Image 1 (tube, helix red, strand yellow):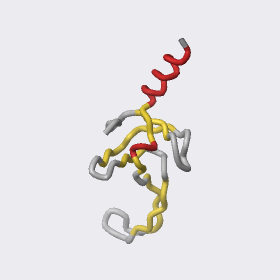
Image 2: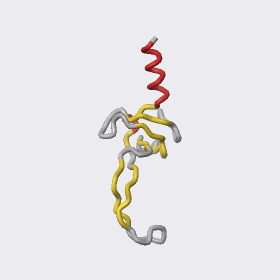
Image 3: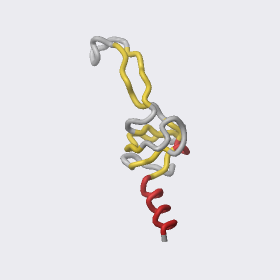
Length: 83
């Protein structure tokens, strides 16, 4: 996997293209990553001890690892291109 947990990445493809965020989880078997504030979905939650009212919560869903690139790699490319 080319990105690690807690690394800052930029989404390079998909509906959230251009957004930046920190990698919260890496799912290597599925080749997916969960990025903070990216690919937000609404999930219906049943009432439980943790959430007594239940309801609809907004959470991050995994996106394919090929759709993100490390911010450090982008900066390196810009520096190399510049001079």
